[in-house]
Length: 547
Image: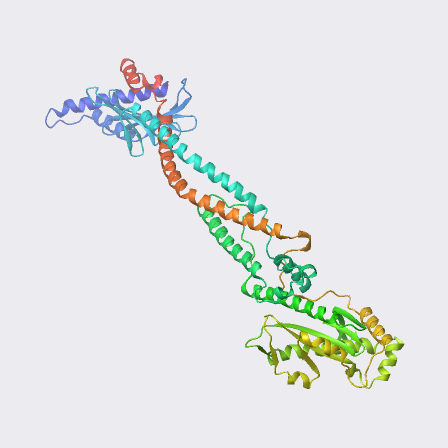
């Protein structure tokens, strides 16, 4: 109460002072008395100073600040316990209210300002940032308008959003059931070929469709599936990028599938053709009706660096007959103009067949079998016993001739076609003929010395499907069905996105307006009735104890 009395006294002194100044101003050349000067100095000292103090009240207001401001007003700010200014009241020196400002409870930018002039005429408006409203009913009207607009637009956008979610869920399900198309782990040629055969529906043991497997278009179905997955990947990549750019979130199980490059397709085609050619050679050898032993895909130890290190050497077909030991190397080639130039493959083939002979000599020379020991003593040279043969199988239906084979013949390599195999097997070099017991002994020695290591693997090998996938035509078609359904659902979502995004942007703008007016409404609807407050104040001007 002491501070209250001091403040009121200051106000009265100030009021009286200005009244005296006003009265004296009517008289020309009036000198200020010492008392007047003293009062003026006191006023100058308190002008602009803030006098905070606490006061008891029922509204939870904890303290206020009274400040004397020029040219003769008292400004009063009242705070809640959080230090937020709720009221700013500007008084005339006679303690009548000049301005009454009430702020929102959370944001000082929301306020209602009421101004009274000297005639007690009131001017009132609500404000947030640059928006001024003179009537609270207008705020409520705006709020109701934007609420209805938001609900109306939501009614348009929500079905589109639900449709998109439905298509996205179905897309996710189809993507989940998609199996990996290509695996690039190191695998054997045998596993890769078996997988390719399954994908091509070429079951050699049943259909014997070897000519189709030899053709240049033998991976036509694989190429078609691969092309389909390229389209699939393009759609998936673009769709996922669009979903990310729009902040709609990616589809979890939807991802591009690894596809075959042009090099992969050529390699796959060559693998299939090579396997078919070997099968044709195997079939033709079996047609020769006399005692022989045939071993397909034989892997023997091969001595490197003067027998200090052993490697592996793979022989496509090893035939042990009375006419000798035949190492068949099979090549599937494409002829042009009914002929094929063998010099193109000389370096590769000569190196391969040389290893064949060396690996067989290595096995026979270290044998402890008496029949083989006696055989090596009987024949003039072991080299005369082993014959390297290159069988060239055409990948086209037309007949062809082999050109420039003289260089092969000079190093003891025989070059022939499928039709030449039978006559080749029955003709033996002069003075060399294997007895039945020798044929059996050599066959047994080769089988016993078969390398335990698996077939060599190469990084360029491609495994399309593993054996445990039980791939058949139904399984392939099921994969393609899921891929087509993914693309179909992507198209549905992309078609809906244009309308959805347009509606969503408009809805978002309306919603922002709705939030603006809702906040405005929530902030000012609980403001004190300024008119009632003013009238009460005029009756009882003990403001500091009233609020």
